[in-house]
Length: 103
Image 1 (tube, rainbow, N blue to C red):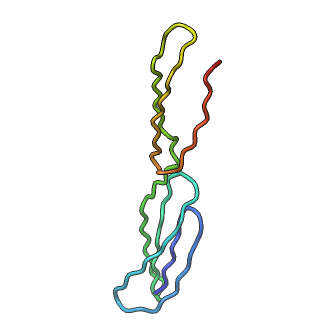
Image 2 (image 1 turned 90 degrees about the horizontal axis):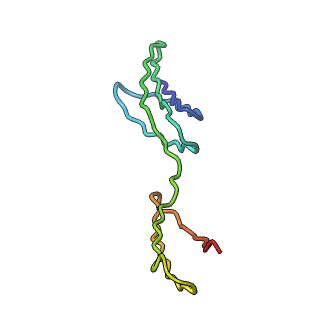
Image 3 (image 1 turned 30 degrees about the vertical axis):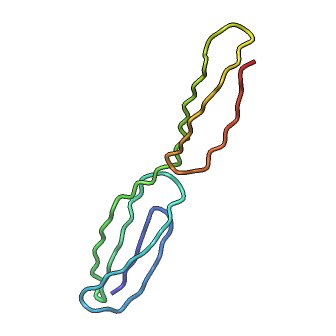
């Protein structure tokens, strides 16, 4: 039996001589966001084949989330304001900050 794995990007070929039933595991890394059809085609020595596919959805990196609070937010000059930023990143990436006070 010959098995051909096909994905949206790349192709791997594995030639195997096996019995009636078997399993195989393949790993593929998608490098770009998108929806892909990952397919496997199995062909026996008589040329009979079957193909099955599974959709794979790859999302891109998400932007960090930031909340900003100013205390106090209003008052007479000169006004000392304490800014508190709460940061998170849905992907667990390291987040850096750059501040601009608008003056």
